[in-house]
Amino acid sequence: MPHTNRRVFLKQYRDGMPLLEDFGIEDSAVGDVPPGHVVVKVDTLSIDAWIRTTLTPGSFHETAGLGATIRALGVGQVVESASDALASGDWVFGPLSAQTHALMPVAALTKLDLSNSLQPRDYVGPLGLTTGLTAWVGLIAVAEVRSGDTVLVSGAAGAVGSMVVMLAKARGARVIGIAGGPAKCRYLTEQLGADVAVDYKNADVAAEVAAATSGGINVFFDNVGGEILDIALENLAPADARIAICGAISQYSDLGNVRGPKNYLKLAERNAVMKGFVVTHHAARFPEAKAEIAGLMAAGKLVLPEQVVEGIDHFAEALLLLFAGGHTGNLLVRP
Ligand SMILES: NC(=O)c1ccc[n+]([C@@H]2O[C@H](COP(=O)([O-])OP(=O)(O)OC[C@H]3O[C@@H](n4cnc5c(N)ncnc54)[C@H](OP(=O)(O)O)[C@@H]3O)[C@@H](O)[C@H]2O)c1
Image (cartoon, rainbow, N blue to C red; front, side, top):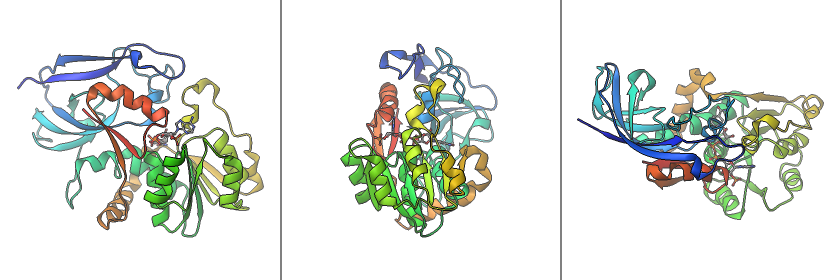
C-alpha cells in the first residue's frame, strides 16, 4: 500500500537561534519496505531541547545533515510491516523524526506496553525517555532525593521540570521552582503543587531563591545553567547537597562559549556533589522509574499538563517556541 510522507528538513545552518526560513517541508512517496523494516504512521512527537543542538555543526547530539529530516522522538502505529517482530496496528516508540510516516528498522523501535490503561502519548509524556524518565533519573538515581529535602528546580514549568516538581513532592520534599513569568509561576504552585515559585524574568532571583531556601538547598535539579546555577551554588545546604546537571538550555545557542559556574568552590566549602547525567546511561533503572511513575498516574497523583501543536507543518514553530519559553508543561506535535 503506497504511503505519502510529509517531512520537515533542515535547509541551512545558522549561528545563534534558527529561524523558520531555515526549515523546509516536502512530500515524497515512502518506498518499498525492506525486510526487517516497518512503516510507522507518526502519532505524536516530543519537542525536546536536544533537537536544537542537532541544528548546529559540532553538536554533541550529532549534527543534522542539510536536507535531513529533523530528528525527534515520538510514538506511532505500524501501518505496514516486513518483519515478524511487529505487526500492523502495533504501537511503538522511537526516533521517528519530524514526519508523518517513518520507514524504520524494527531494531530502532520499542513496542509499547498499553496495559493498565496506559495511552501511547504517555510514552512521550510522564513515561517518556526525555521527560518523565529523565526527571526520575536526575532526581532519584543521581540526586538521591529524600523526604524532607529542600529541592530547587530550574526550567521548572517545562516538560522535565514539571515532572521533577511532581516527583519531588511525591517523595516528600519541599519544592521551589524557577520559571519565567507570573502565569508559569501560578502553574507551578497551583497545578503542580510546588511550595514556592520564583519568576526569574521579573524578580531578583538571587534574593528570592535565598529567601525561599534559607540557604539550605539539599538538591538542585538544573535544566538551565548559567547565572541560575551560580545562584543555586551560593545557597547550598551547609553539607551534602546534590546537584544534578540535566541540561543548560540558557547556553545552547552559543555552545562555543558556555558560561561555567563561577561559584564552583562552594562544592568544596559545603561538601557537595555536582553530577551530570545522560538518561540512557541509567537504563537499568527504567523499570523502577516506570513502576513509580505509572503507580502515581494510576493513583491520580500525577498528571503531566500538555501543550499540543497540530500539524507537521508547524513542527519548526513548536521547536522555536520551546526556546522562547512559549509553552507550559510537555510540548508535543501531532503530525
Ligand atoms: N541529561 C539528559 O539525559 C536530558 C534528557 C532530556 C532533556 N534534558 C535537558 O532537560 C532540560 C529541559 O528540557 P525539556 O525538553 O523538558 O524542555 P522544556 O523545559 O520543556 O522547555 C525549555 C524551557 O526552558 C526555559 N528556557 C528557555 N531558554 C531559557 C533561558 N535562556 N534561560 C532560562 N530558561 C530558559 C523556558 O521556560 P521559561 O519560560 O521558564 O524560561 C522553556 O519553557 C534541557 O536542558 C534539556 O537539554 C536532559
